[in-house]
Image (tube, rainbow, N blue to C red):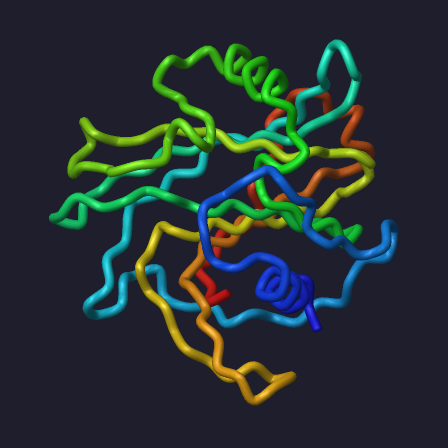
Length: 218
């Protein structure tokens, strides 16, 4: 199985579909044991017939170290525009997965004060945190939403990271679970791949380049 397949299986068991929260910690693989890879289903970036799809623009992935606790966090900025012809609901799910088997939903185990400090560091009054940004997204560029999400980065040893964004598309598919006779739903999701050459600490707050973007069913 791949990091994508394992991550999908873990999240299907641990997290039922619903709004993001910060009350529990998702299960994680043992550290320093990267999981084997197997390709997930890659699909077209164009919306399927009958489905709507928002316009999502990736911002920057950067490292932030809290000045009081010295704990490191990754944060990602983005922009989303509704050009679907109808007002929609923006309630995305952002998940992080790395080459050390860490799987985490954004906001979990992130103190509110850290989110506020990162928001001040970004310095853009239009950029909202993952809870402020939730709600109706009206049509057109003038009603675009800009947001950011945060994950703990400790232990800071990952050099390959994958970020999954669900909620940009309404496309859903029912597929049989290979481990059981049950049918489960997979959602059209954007997958962003990042690589940090060398020690992430040495990179500091410089933006990490995105190496690849794919639409997948997950």
